[in-house]
Amino acid sequence: MNLTVYLAGQIHDNWRDELKQKAENKNLPITFVNPMTNHSRSDDIGEEILGEQPDKIIKDDKASDFNNLRTEILLSKSDVVLAFFGESYKQWNTAMDASTALALNKPLILVRDGSLHHALKELSNKATVTVENFDQAIQALSYVFEEE
Image (cartoon, rainbow, N blue to C red; front, side, top):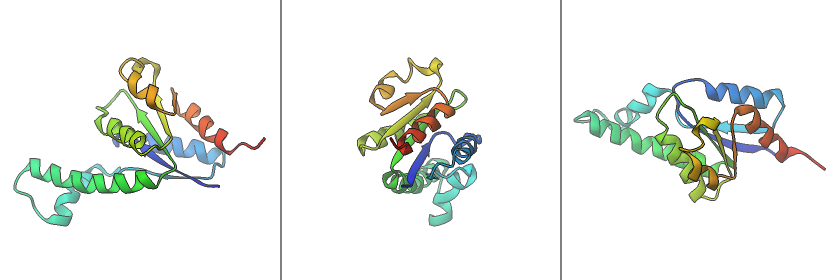
């Protein structure tokens, strides 16, 4: 069995690489997918496809259309959604992706530091599991593959 795991979260640092390496170290049969992590490409995709837009608001709106298309397809084809909430960046997209996972009845692993407990308590209570770090998230995914 192979699992496809959608990695929801901010795209400003390499947290996905760290998580993927941990899964690889355990030889887990997981395929990871995620939003576009090239920030410039994500911001410019609307104009790349549709041409120059009249202002920054419309440019953002059109880019959002294509980013939402990507997210909806990849998230809906995933077996599990892992949503990472860090402290460094605003996490609106992460919250939206986690909520979409819940609406699609996808298993949701919420990763957040204990200091974010209060801010994320409602979402955490809806998630399948909530963990505080990537090691715990990988342990949760490893458990899926354990045989009796």
